[in-house]
Image 1 (cartoon, rainbow, N blue to C red):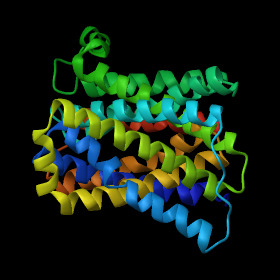
Image 2 (cartoon, one colour):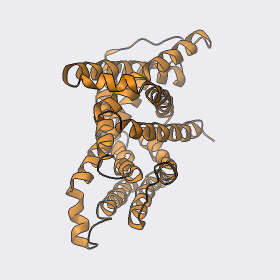
Image 3 (cartoon, rainbow, N blue to C red):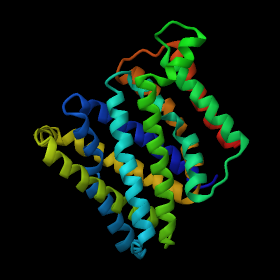
Length: 301
């Protein structure tokens, strides 16, 4: 088994924990605060990881270059926007389905991989995109009148557009992170991933903290009062991010994100057993179609 596969599965599990924790935090603070927590509280753990890789394992710390800084900034901004939209989406739909709206990310990452890095897109990739978008449309009309007109009209609905936009930004950030990590040129995938994550999460923390101080200062008090769950969110978020960065250093971002659809299983479990939410048959079919699109991306694309 290639190393990126168990790394990706572990990262998907940790990301599900982080998303569940962020949904809990959304109940005690605003969307901006819940978005900031994954970065601000994850930053110390990332620095500790870089320190351990350098001092305990002896890996040199690679220095940044202009290409690295550009890709890291693009990825960081894209991830902030994508996370904000995904958390905002939780206000309108339940946990599992809200997460599923962003599931076109791997197919979109394949497109951005072609545009940014010259990674080829095949007919299988086009099929994967079509299947995934159809799944999103099914979810959109799960609680509406079931007919073809409402089905195709749903792609322009508020919820669908928010989810698709989130997936777009996640796809851009994934490809950008792969490009940033590869631009370091060594010493190995673990240190490249850790250093990339450290720069990105520092940038995101400073940017979001400045915004909160400027526009939403009351959020600081709510974040401080919820420091314990915020610390947990930061830890699992940083751990999941390191897994994604490591896997995407070893493999194309679209392929990594395709395998990451295993998170859907974790999401359904959290939705049913933790949040006590009900998933309709149509929503389930839609989620499965999105996952099927990603399987097509891996096997045929």
